[in-house]
Length: 399
Image 1 (tube, rainbow, N blue to C red):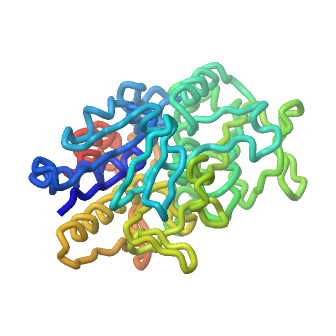
Image 2: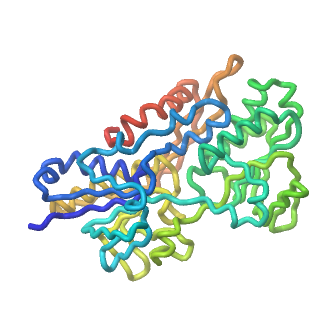
Image 3: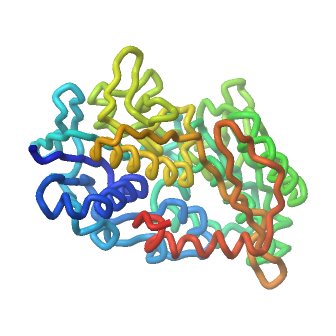
């Protein structure tokens, strides 16, 4: 029997969990050269992007949310980074992936977990006044410096388009911003700063999540404008303009930009009409119209718009994909389904000398909606702790 090859595109959280789970399950097959697991990525540093929300406020440092990928991925996995790992084109018919260096990789099973990318240019004028905690460590730290020196005026937090990765993060940032200005910078500063949150849709998350965060916004004197669909940013006039012509003035604009698929996936012609990788929502196998590839899985932020793009969801999806690959390679005929398990941490307040931190890990699935909940002090500490145990637990597929 010839050696079987599993090729994983993307060494972020989802791709690494799949790789590590398979490597542990098939350690003997790998040692006997019956199976090969390869993971490709252009970057050899793993960044826990969920920590970006906390960076502007000094609650984490870059060292807290970064690790070398070779520390996280099993040595049984062939990890390829740089130009030999940067995906350029995927050919599903030929079962072949081409990378930036020109090298090609054949596969028997393909896992696509390359994530999505910010597309600032979708919004005219946005690049001329772009401040964000979403897009990189450097951007988050730069925003933090601006907040340290922002003494009065109006801060507008703009979610430009949906879907975005971690859709609850803009609300968490807004709550943390209020607490930072009120309890760290001081009440006098907060009185002189207006905070406005612009949302392109009606609800901030599921109804139960929306209800509690809306009440927090109201209590903290945070203006919430729903269904604000941005058309352009007028940086000279410091205005955000909606498609309906409504204008919102600002002194500091914080933007969660539109997101789209990676250039490689778009260039490969394997995306749907919205630019995402089409998969069956239960099996996560590639499916577009009459075209199906059962050996191809896509998960995490790259999936279709109807599958929520959250870190919790990606973690569940990675286990489902890994288990189904194990079943297929073992030939036992078993299948497990992704039931839409996902979630979003809620932050009600941060821990300061005057306030208790309060948080809750809200979870739900396709069939079971999120139930009403209450944020707790324990939830805050568990949430903060997770960013440390993530490296040795979650990403190594042991929790």
